[in-house]
Every structure is written in C-alpha cells, then in structure tokens.
Amino acid sequence: MKIPNILTLLRILLIPVFVFFYYLPQAWAPMTAAVIFGVAALTDWFDGYLARKLNQSSPFGAFLDPVADKLMVAVALVVLVETFSEVWITIPAAVIIGREIVISALREWMAELGERASVSVSGLGKIKTTLQMVAILLLVAFTPYTSLSWIGVAALYGASLLTFWSMVLYLKAAWPVLGDDL
Image 1 (cartoon, rainbow, N blue to C red):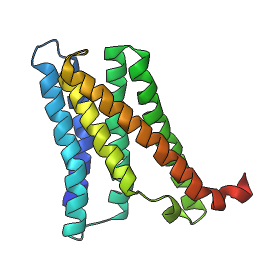
Image 2 (image 1 turned 90 degrees about the vertical axis):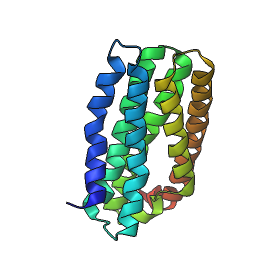
Image 3 (image 1 turned 180 degrees about the vertical axis):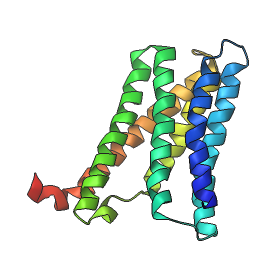
Image 4 (image 1 turned 120 degrees about the vertical axis):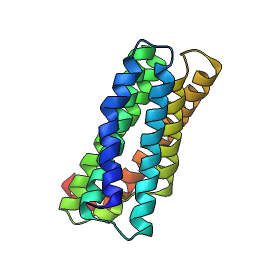
C-alpha cells in the first residue's frame, strides 16, 4: 500500500470521526470537528503532493482520491444543512453536491467513450475545492450567525459559484464528444 493511498483511506476513515465529534453536546466539539475536517482536508493536498513527489501515482489512488473528497465534502455539507436549517445554506450545498454527482457521472461516461482527458481536473477545480474546504471549516468551527460563520457563508457562496462555473466548463468540454449521443 502506497503512502498517498494510505492518506486517502485515512481521509475516508476520518469522516465518521468528524460526524461523531460534530454532534457531541460539548462546547469544544465544534472546534474538534473542525480540526478533524482540517486534517482530512490537508491529507487531500498532501496525498497528491506525495504521489507526484515519490512517483507513487496509481490507478487505485486516481479512483479513490476524488471519491474520498466527495464523501468528505458531501457529509460535511449535509450536517451543516441540518445545523443551519436555512435555504441560504441548503442551496449552495445542493449545488455543490449536485455538481459532484453530475461530474462523476460525466467522467464515467467519458471514460467509457475513451475521452476521460476531456474532463480532467482543472486549476479552477483546485480553487473551488480550497474555497469549499475553507467554507466548511469555518461553518463547522464557529457558531451559526457569528462573524466568522458569515465569512464561511460567503466562502460557501464563492465555492458554489465556482462549482456552477466549473460544471459549465466541463459540459462545454464534453459537448463535442457527447453531441452525437444527445
């Protein structure tokens, strides 16, 4: 088992730990959950860095890494939607989760057509992911409706806009290939 894959599996294993601490009825629980989420988010960056640096990229890692990311973000957004229970949190969360489902399906379809490279990860996607992670971290760590949680909401909307824009770009890139099937 390669180090980057171990880090990716660790990220998946941290998801139930994050949820456990998130729902603990203790004053320190939100900050603990935020630290766990932050560690998981750092492993996302670190596993990719190590895979490139140590030349330990693998097909399994290429499959598992985006799955771990999507699981981590989706679970965190779901608990935040439950906590805030407001449409202005639900809408960007739904956009982000919905985009992940659409793009995953599109990548699978394109892979079947032998055109997976047409929908590869872009620099915009990395910025979107970073903004998502920062937004979630702030919304988990700080009580709803405080100054820092509002910064998290703003970051969530920024991530949501980048999410929507990246989906448009993915669909535009895929359109020439998919045009015959539509």
